[in-house]
Length: 552
Ligand SMILES: [Zn+2]
Image (cartoon, rainbow, N blue to C red; front, top):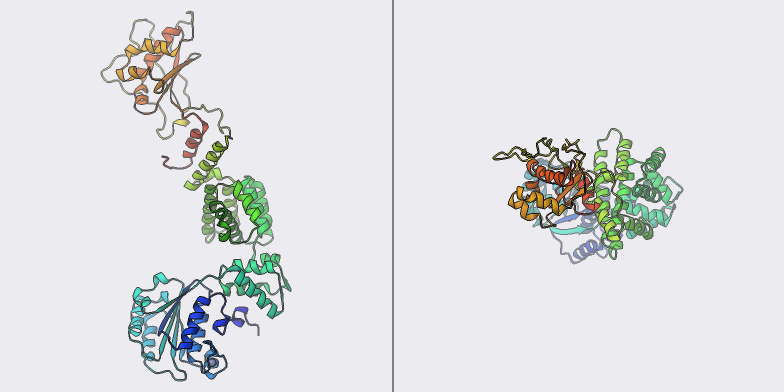
């Protein structure tokens, strides 16, 4: 009968446990010295050896002939525990036996001395799953444990275990195991089992297992149907796209080559690659590039090790930190959505489209990514042309002026006590988008001689008509300036109160009247805020359209 590798190779002694010597050495010494605690709690992620060590400890404390703190594996106690005939070593899975009744029953039988071995040992796996009342019942035993009793609790989620329980247990933390350590162990087992496993394939399996020996052996099991296990075998068995294809995909994404990205994914899909695994591989690659980006010197220690350093550096030079974070967020979002996706292929395709068109990103980090890219461009002096060249460089508002009356001395605008402020027909949030509306032109006799009028002359003419606030600002070019441009008078104002004061029909009409009179032709007035001079501001304004983000 075929036995799964991880069962067949389950360590029988502390010395056989891979990568947890800080725990196993301590336990061995305690067994040797006979200084054992009555309750232990083993903490660590799945597959790192917690229950394995619990079983070894249960045997070691009962072994009739322990060897250097390890169970001998041959005596009646060891063999009885191994084959399950010793009923004094009890394993409970709290995930399935979480009822308070189970712990009550446990309490009742706990008072009796063990029947066939020295210590009755309860191993409670996933102990954090116990109900509150079950924890309370357990606490009662832990408070005054009989001499013949030992508890070994194991958990992946220590924060869910009550402090009252923890404080009564000796704690041991199980680490994720290094990739090289797991890889070496896999190569050893492959050698013993007599099948070929390449070093690269062993490392790949070890990385995929993320520090858990049990997962690594399960993966090796899945691959072992093949005579020779190479990297490609692992990719194929696991439904993975593989390094080369994932790196090629990131290249398409950076080039915004949506068509090629979708084509490549289509062929991976036809090859039977799994969408979720592919996105995870892409996420791993992005993560490694990010690590290299944020910590170029020490980052190599943090790399998962799947890619050549040169490949990662190449990507790192082509991507901004914010772009990487944004891309990782996008991938994560689609990975999450994949769980309930009716059509996983479409979900992955949407993810790729979103990644290739990062300008479509709707999250804050996508915007930050674009800003970072712009800043980097400015730093190098290479600034891309604004995308919408037909748009003016500044924020522009155009005003319709009322017709000038035929009579020269008639008032241009009827005087009222409180003239209504002119309201431009633009949404406050988005002045850039304002389209010019056809102005009602001032009617001036065209037969007169025309000339270009300097701004200072217009100010002189219009000044007396204007409120002091505006009048005093006219001499300060940093606050207000103007320029005749054909039959258009462009007035630029600093944003804020002054702009608000100017931005009234009656005020602008006075400028228009002065300019018209001086130039002898019909003049339109266009009021703009001073632009912040370059396209970056406009690009930021563009960005704002993508999302409601507050820019400081
Ligand atoms: Zn023994």
